[in-house]
Picture 1 (cartoon, rainbow, N blue to C red):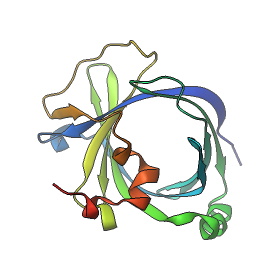
Picture 2: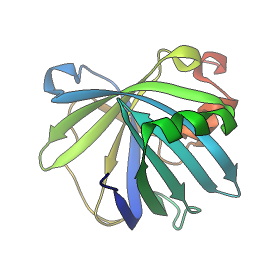
Picture 3: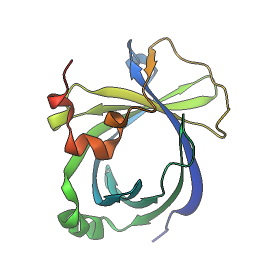
Picture 4: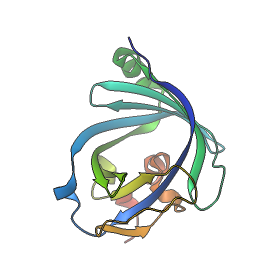
Length: 164
């Protein structure tokens, strides 16, 4: 089996959606993810993307204003992931991730299901903290620094419980 293994800094920004992104979607994937550990800004995440499984370890945020943190990932056998789902804390996030390329960047638009049904937001990964990018018309208010939009937070305080 081939393994995906890397250590990198993840630099991303998150945005609400304010228009129709769907005509620009090039692919979509169902994602189910849980957290084996989440403490002091560090996470151990288990993610099933369609039929593929990935274990991810993320360090604490390194810089304010963008999500910038050390990230390590490794593909694991799906059967092992199914076994590990039993030790995840607080349930699972269920979402569909839509891939939307735009002007040299890839936006990942997450559409949530279950207790987070109705929540949709986009993330864009950047090569550096100060990298500029074109924003599609359907991209709304930035929510990078709002912890409610962290997937791990959505398990504890789901969208259905937010006041709107």
